[in-house]
Image (cartoon, rainbow, N blue to C red):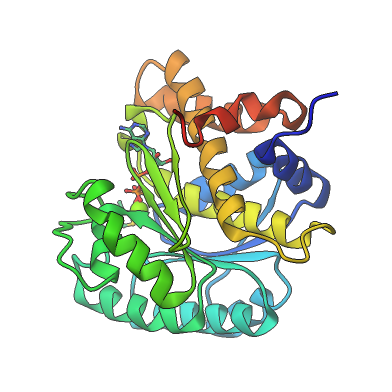
Length: 276
Ligand SMILES: Nc1ncnc2c1ncn2[C@@H]1O[C@H](COP(=O)(O)OP(=O)(O)OP(=O)(O)O)[C@@H](O)[C@H]1O
Ligand SMILES: Cc1ncsc1CCO
Ligand SMILES: [Mg+2]
């Protein structure tokens, strides 16, 4: 018998445990992120009021805070959820959507870093801006490349003791010491909205699974985040092979997520990690 792949093993854990993933996310990504989590085998809950968010974050398996729809009221919910997750020792992921392009969210995201995110996940422009460098982001889409953000990502990871995942044609993930690249995916992923937001939600599900694995007393968020990116990459490549365009890509990608098989090396996901 061959050893289970890292991605496959974590995928199996997600399906065994059905982790509750608390999402404080944006108006665009809400339904898509929930569907992606359900397709994977996790359980989504989209809750943002500060009172309810704090209550849920304390019992959820993982939290994602996504700044895509910002307001002062929403910022309160983001802070409350992140604080509660931090206090409960629950892994949480910050997705700093359009940080650098708009002032309020740039300020709020900077404050959220104080609650110790387990993973920060964004495109290159967002990570550059969060690290305090000029990223050049115009809106929610990146204008910088993953390579442009490499040094900023490493520095951000070290400064905040977090994993930083930068998405693009090839994703790059680091904890400030170790770097992994994840290939796969498809150009159509940039032609539908909220694909990165869904990646953040799915990464949170993998964090929850890794955190609850018995053998993972010293669990590794970098490994879990890499596995999530590989799963998304393998599904993107599969969906891209059959889709006729952005419209048919989305259901094909959701179907691919649901069809991922842990025992079958999650469709070859591990081969996408650090290809020679
Ligand atoms: N040209 C591409 N080729 C392969 N994969 C891609 C490409 N563009 C995006 N992806 C993949 O799509 C996913 C989302 O990455 P992207 O950088 O587009 O996120 P984002 O800008 O945060 O998205 P959004 O904010 O719209 O949700 C990642 O898994 C990434 O690898
Ligand atoms: C299009 C858009 N606008 C705010 S959030 C979002 C989803 C992609 O980040
Ligand atoms: Mg994004």
